Amino acid sequence: MQPATPTTPPLETPRLLLRPLALADAPEIQRLFPQWEIVHFLSSVVPWPYPPDGAFRFIHDISLPAIARGDEWHWTLRLKSDPDRLIGAIRLMKREQKNRGFWMAPAYQGHGLMSEAADAVTNFWFDVLKMPVLRTEKAAANLASRRISEKQGARQVGTVERDYVSGRQLAEIWEITAEEWHSRRRSVK
Image (cartoon, rainbow, N blue to C red; front, side, top):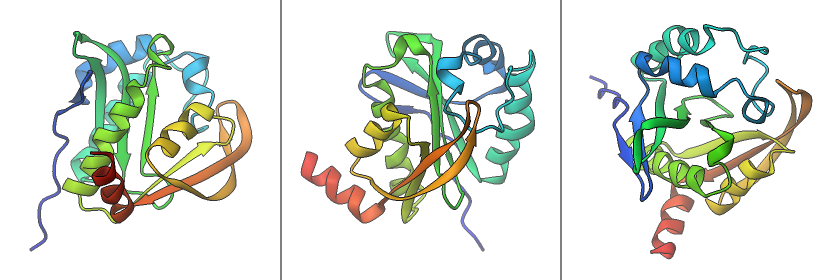
């Protein structure tokens, strides 16, 4: 008998609450998400211009079924100081080249919040899900995302061409193994 896949638990960082994604989050995501500063480095599967029911469709038709299958884990990001305000989202995915994706409202970017969220979900990936490696794929021009991978101790292992909302671009593949992650975490403490 195969062990049950863990559901998406609430997580916490020093400044953030990571709450499991729910259909009730759709209106707030719909309000925040369709901004060029957020979507331009996202995969071209994201429709642009973003449709009026885009958030509802994404959560209802894609996210919740993937969560139910045990293939993905999704969280909304909220400041502890303002827990009712959604400021972004992060997810983990069982895929070959891309295991994590995220976005954050521009007003909250550049303050280290996504690094906190990425550390929390990376811990979940390795410590709870017991995955051997975490891979991320990002547009080479997405320097902020690159910095998060660098801070986490990941290394670039390849490049490919990918289609983004902003057009075809060079993408970098980054990875870190569970052993590297745990070694890094021990040395940081």
